[in-house]
Image: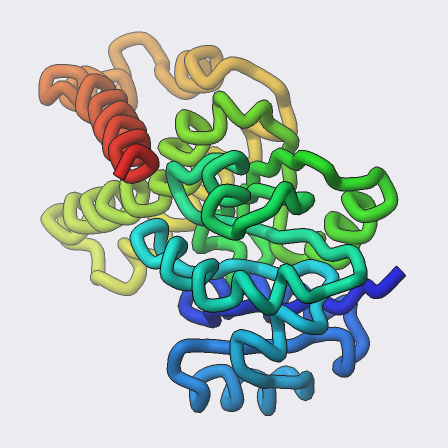
Length: 268
């Protein structure tokens, strides 16, 4: 099987996925392209792989990543549509555009092509991403190849397409909700006299450890919270302050707002 990976768009997310793929692929099996050619060429030099324009990618890649924003997808697929139609070999489109269904991608591309839809997040840049995926028209061999090559990006989880928008509202948008929380924890510690660098380190590592404990223990977050809260102690006093300020409600509303915006992007 032609297992060349081609990425059109090497911004923050596309670049992160390219770096993950480069860990598993021989250099000649990875092609990068970008609206600004110099950006793709620079990353290709860093990864010791190939670069070219969008059409070169579309002509040669078996797995063709469409790393552009939802509002730019129609323009991209229209520009490479003829190139895709002229191909006699099999290929798979890989989309990461929020809100755009596989059906919509096929409509824009002009054919019932095999599609893998992924929703990654920015921690993929350090191999700690949460990447949701679903696929249509893709063989088991192709999916196995895709997951093997991309494993360096982080944790992959299959999800029915009708749940992709809800899932990405947590994992895709979630890092932007977590960073202000880390900053706020550190600010609180600074207000109590801790140096800024130590406050940020302690806050960030605390989130890493707490998150790993949830994943590895399988315990409900509420039970893990209870285990830290001694009767009449400092921790329950802090939890009370969070609840008084509407912490959980604010977090829920952030996810719901992101979900509703994603649905709107898909319609537009």
